[in-house]
Image 1 (spheres, rainbow, N blue to C red):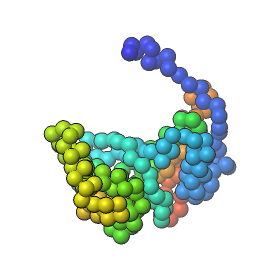
Image 2: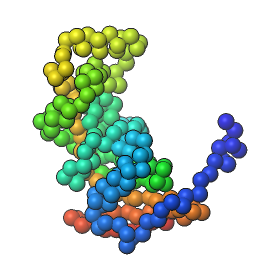
Image 3: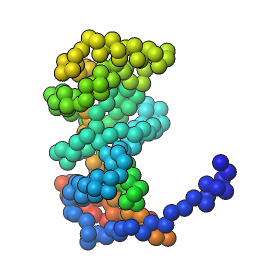
Image 4: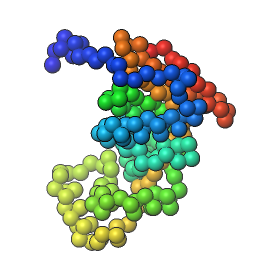
Length: 214
């Protein structure tokens, strides 16, 4: 595709507005409100979020993961601790999240620190996952090289034969993380690129609210 064609791709956002006087003083309450509206608007995968981590060479890496919990003022997701993201979080427990809800012309950016959740909480969630998702987690040594697709399918089939539904053990290297935010920014698209940006900054135990220039 030519640059000229890309440069002509434009949207003028006009569906909503966002003002300091409108937002909840608690950013988690504000997030819950926007998430409920995204679900109500039938946004595809409204809990999908970009997760950015940094490796030992200070190089950033981003991928999409799914939000699976809002607890204790933190954002929870699950993955394989031995994956690239898991290794990066082990050596640098700082991360950034970004949600994009195009149908509502909104995004939310979250920066904070990351820690593992207790194993019993991970096990409780793992037991709620669909049977084949449990098998998939057990079959995949996430981020490790494999020879081909057939290798994975054979491993999955062997596990399906070995473990009946309700008996799949949680992998030792699998579990949840919580992202504890230090900043949360709510972005609402507006006309003429004069977007609304409301940022919450944690200072001590208090959230300061400010408007940013678009």
